[in-house]
Length: 411
Image (tube, rainbow, N blue to C red; front, side, top):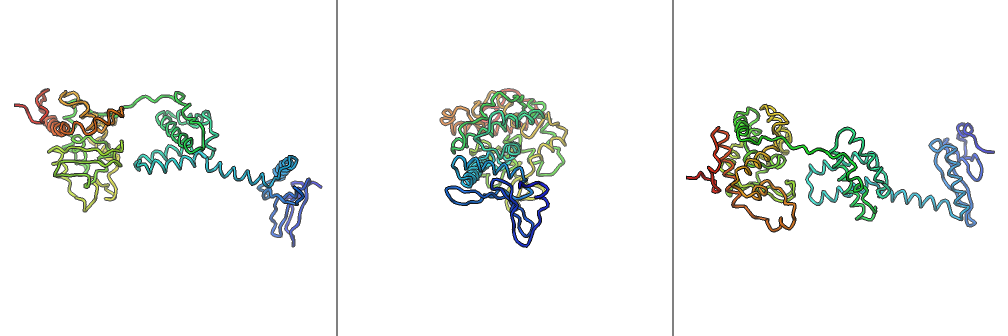
């Protein structure tokens, strides 16, 4: 007699285990404690065997019968359903190891070992969390371009065009890694080029006219915030490094006798060491810092812990406090300021300026041949630039050609 849902629900434990039979070998095994387990007896190649289909009520009567019917079809083909279940489990395990998330996690380990910074790794994990929430468990080889696009559209609909673009690019790197490790055959993210809304380029705000630069420098001199923040503000225009490089500056990176600051590769965007000639003014500003390496290895430690650098928002917050709005000036804007005014001078080779900005030449061959060039010119240029800033700060009129490439005023 076939089982009913009511009969299964009312089955109680007895002194000894017992069976409630359904049909075609399916039965419910009831333990003394009241546990109810789905089983199926069958014969294959003359041997009696038993399959387990799950536990009631997690597996209901209809599900158990569906699994029984699938097992009977396998028997009809001459297959052992128990072996098929084992193969399916192995396939599921392999699929889990080859899921998008599993491959992405491997790729993250790889790029971290290649020297990506902690900040970059944090951004990559943050980006991939968006995609893992939707398709992270899917086998990487079975994900389609349309499926990936569907996961990016909600982000795009919120106006986060740049984030969607970066996420597509990051996914593309994961798919290429999956191809290299024989777990996928195509980079489906590449098919989405042109499918997403292209973000409009947003340039970081910067003051780039001599008159306004003078006003900014005078405002910095009268800044009444934390002394270390003021030092960072005063130093920024003289060295025009990236904000993260300034925040993570350590005493060990400086050779004061040679007037040189060498930023190690792991702190730079391009993962190459970057050297900054220190002008007389830059050295004087550094000399005003009221602590040394015995206190903190950082020039600009956090107010909360000397083991960490200052917050990435410190300089920007100080600029806002001085009255410079977000669309007017940023910490990164000191780079655009220097690049604009140095090029306008017409005194310096454009490549010398680019090298001092730590910009990477897009031509790999040319980059190889120009490595190490313009150093002497950069030393003169940085001193000239600091002298120029002093003039602007003091409100003096600057006449083009007043300074030569020696960094000294012409006779």
